[in-house]
Amino acid sequence: MNRSANGFSMLATALVAMWFASSRCSCAESVPASVPEEASSIPWQVLTPDTFAQARREQRFVILDLEAEWCHWCHVMEATTYRDPEVVRLIAARYLPVRVNQEQRPDLANRYEDYGWPATVIFAADGSEIAVRSGYIPPERMMSLLQAIIDDPSPGPSVVPPPSSAGGAESLPAAQRAELEADYRAAYDRVHGGWGTVHKYLDADAIEYGLVQGGAGDAGRMALETLAHVRTSLLDPAWGGLYQYSAGGGWEEPHFEKIMAVQTDGLRCFSLTYARDRDPAWRDAAEAIHRYLTTFLRAPDGAFFTSQDADLVQGEHAAGYFALDDSARRALGMPRVDRHRYTRENGWAIRALVAYANAIGDPAILDEARITARWALAHRQRPDGAFMHDDAAVDQDVDGAYLGDSVAMAQALMALWIADGDSAWRMALERTLAAIDGFADPPGAGYRTARGDPASRPQRDENVALARCANAYARCSGDQRWRAMALRAFSFISAPAIASRRPAASALLVADELGREPVHAVAVGDPTALQPLITAALGLPTAYLRIDRWDPASGPWPGPGEGYPADPSGVMYLCIGDRCLAPARDAAALRASYLRAMGGD
Image 1: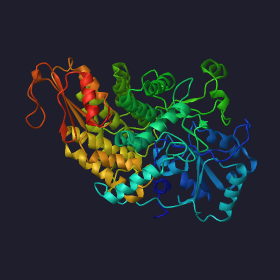
Image 2: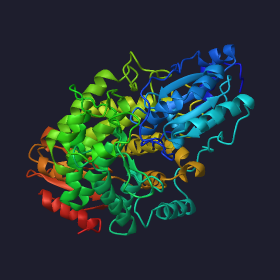
Image 3: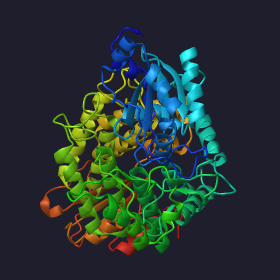
């Protein structure tokens, strides 16, 4: 690398993409129960293309504070460490302080996701990393770190190269699949439940894989057991919504921030589980999350805000506050809501709302998803079909587009098209997928986080989401362009260094869907008269679904092959894999036939 190049480009090279949808706040240290209220005297700057040029001119290191607005430990670090006089003096003497909200910069969030928030990164003036630290750093440790780098700026052991992302095969070899399956089960906590160790949280891929693949077996039991812990320990009893995680290795120490990734993963998982079991407890949990989203995070125009803070008073742990009921909480005040309306988070919300609407058969919920999608198309889509992360006036993107936003909206548009058959969603989906093609990583494996940054690299979760969406649309449309897109994303996901990173379920989910057809329902007859059957098909316990609607009165069968008999009374055909079930004429028969075919009851 030419270290005399533009400072912003060098930073981009250092900031390689590995984003985790439900980013974690690291909480290993203990801190005082209260913190001082005086303002920080550190002159934090925003990240600009001139940041490293300024650092070189002034012969300074760059200290990056990568924070999340909802993060309790970010607040504690601001109130203690960054107000300590000696820390302030050292930074003023030799450092250029830069602060970034990780939700505004997915490229930075992707690079440092494994460190949790806050993440502290110290760079040399040429943009190379010297040190990366995870979570809260108390004043004494920060003083030591800052002075040590002044004394010897050699990179420390925390600076490691990213894992190799050389492309893997188009499917998982048997040995690799067996290894991932074994890791999926080995990573499960048989004592406390869940796939986390220090932190207990909702791992959506692990749960979905358990529900879809496990059936009534061990994987299904692990998924249901984890969801039960999430429901009883992380679901806010007063306002609804899910706390982000529990610390301490069990489920008894919830941390109270509520971020969109957790809400939408939870709403989808509880909806899928209700669709499977029809247990009212799962529906109640999904309803509580939906109530929270629409009460606390929905803007008047139908878009969604990003998160709600963990603290009523920044830096003070809020367990006492969240133990109160609604009226007692409101009497004390309300934790701050981050009112940014990021496209990615709104795409997640749309997809989750559609899953909930499908599971309970409520068209009003589907209308909510439509309103949000129309807002995103009107306010966030660029002329080229890609989506901006934020409003154009404040967007800090490299070229105005990140992969995560476009992929989240592609999934949302796909879900809406399946749910209501409106070709407008399909056309918008194709425009978005075509724009995503511009994110392809030139070496040939996967799609990178930032299209306008040549140093940006692919990140697993974004490629998992893209592979699943592009493959599903290829199966539904028959257009092999999107199958090629899915396989390209999977060639990155299946690389051993990427696939083996927990949760192993992520690669397994993609491999499973690439290797089979979705559940395929075909409604033949007047769509209005057949709506109960279509609603029943949408409510089947699968996230991998294709629905075709054909009214013989409108013309000949538009699909491949000879088509289906033009039954005047209306009928639903259902195919699973390489077998088709008996035609169904009522919703109960359709569901019963599906469950029997899948080995349920």
